[in-house]
Image (cartoon, rainbow, N blue to C red; front, side, top):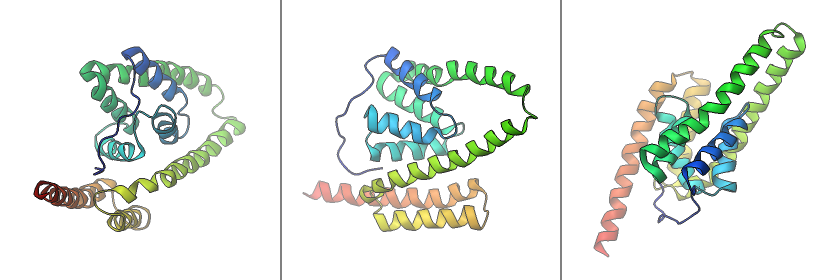
Length: 199
C-alpha cells in the first residue's frame, strides 16, 4: 500500500453512473482490458490515483476470478457498499455477455476461415502489447511504494524470472513472493507508524 496520505479525487456520482461507467469500460476491453481500465479509472475519470490503482489491482489479482471484475466490485463497494459492488458487477457483465454470445454465434459460422483465424492471432499480439504498455506506465507508482523502489524492482525481476524463465506455477509465486512482500510491507508500515507516533 502507498504510504502517501489519501487524496481527494472524483468519484462515481450515483449507482447509474457506476453501472454505465463499468458497462462502457467492459465494452472497450477487447483484447487487453487492463490498459482500458487503467486509462478510464486513473486518467479519464480519476476515481483512483496511479498508486491506488496499483494497490487495488494487486489485491484484485490475488482474489479468485477475473481481475477486472474483482476490481470493479472493490470500487463499487468502496463508494456504495454492497449495492455498489453488485451494480459494478452487473455493469461489467450484462451487456458484454450479450455481445460475447452474439459474437460466439457469429464466429461459429466462420471459425474455419483462414482470415478469421489470422485475425484472432493478430489480436493476441496486440493484447500482449497493450498489457506491456500499461505495465510500463504504472512503473512510476513503485517509487512511492512503502517497500522502497529497490525492493519493488527486485521482486518484479524475481517474479519475471520465476514465471517466464523457470516456469514456476503462478500460485507458488504468489504464495511465496507475495507472502514475503506482504510481510515486508507490513514491517515497513509499522516502522512508519512508530516514527509518526514518536513525533
